[in-house]
Amino acid sequence: MQFPEKLQQKISQRVAQNSLRKLGKENSLIDFSSNDYLGFAKSEVIFNKTHQFLVDNNSKVNGATGSRLLSGNHKLYTEVEKQLAKLHNSETALVFNSGYDANIGFFASVPQRGDIILYDEFIHASIRDGIQLSNAKSFKFKHNDLPHLEELLKRVQHNDSDIYVVTESVFSMDGDSPDLIAISQLINKQTTNTHLVIDEAHALGVFGFGLIQKLQLGNVVFARIITFGKGLGCHGAAILGSEQLQQYLVNFARSFIYTTGLSPHTLATIKIAYEELTFSNSLEKLQENIQHFISESNRLQLNFIESTSAIHCCVISGNERVKNIALQLQKSGFEVKPILSPTVPLNQERLRFCLHAYNSKEEVTDVLEKLATFV
Image 1 (cartoon, one colour):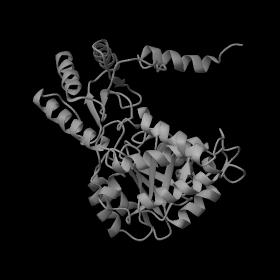
Image 2 (spheres, one colour; image 1 turned 90 degrees about the vertical axis):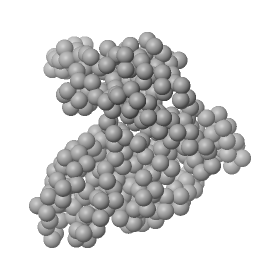
Image 3 (cartoon, helix red, strand yellow; image 1 turned 180 degrees about the vertical axis):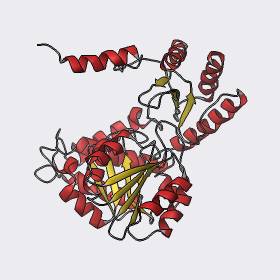
Image 4 (cartoon, rainbow, N blue to C red; image 1 turned 135 degrees about the horizontal axis):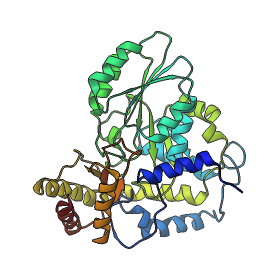
């Protein structure tokens, strides 16, 4: 069967631009690439406690058996959602199968025709895809630019329009954060039809229960999207918000309604991971490594985007150049991945370093000194 020519042309174009993506392979390199910030994905303690929890609760099944609105709403869903709501100081929590599903479900269903979405220009692809499925109008504001956001808010204020302001507490491709306090104050000054939506995917675990909670801004936020596949080391996501929002999503979020539920094992892993988060010293170790990374990159005069999160990016223009430097670091024993255009804008290609609780300070120093010799 012949492959469509139009599709082959798009692949050939990626090859010509040196930006063709390929699936990676498992290796034994020192990890500066994965989202497993606290090491929970590798935790034997969490693995064993999850297994024992399922045995003790006679939950020896492999799947949910159906969507949550049919046969898949097993008792662990209720237990975990109550746990999440309590720990995150939220009225409710609604679990989705992934962060992508949560963002698609929310943005495709909540903003209505005639509503306005204002989003940071560096917002995650899953949010952009959800916005494209929405009937609302959308406008982007410059990255972390509060004056530009305020200007747009003044332009779009209409009595009959709900306005959704969307940003991330930690951006996945830069590792930086907006001034969440200033944004919340700006939202408070608006009419009651302005709603703040925050994606906390890369903040959960790195900053405890997230930056919104750390800054005590939960009462200002209409919806928080949290995901468990990064700092919590497992799988799934949840939307935190009011009882009315939960009820609405259960009825209208298609990515929630029309998919098989998560298995009891997945929900049990989320439950145990949260319990581990409350008393583990992994967060303290991660914060020490973040401070050491910042100190060493300053000492070596390396040009990193300012960040206090677990993500640190060194902008190196050009797909070929950044791929070559990444390859040199990999040959030196470090798993560091290049982020290429079109994932990031042209000439904003970068090396993305993800820090973990299990990295040693010696490894941090070594990889940065190697980088200094290449750039």
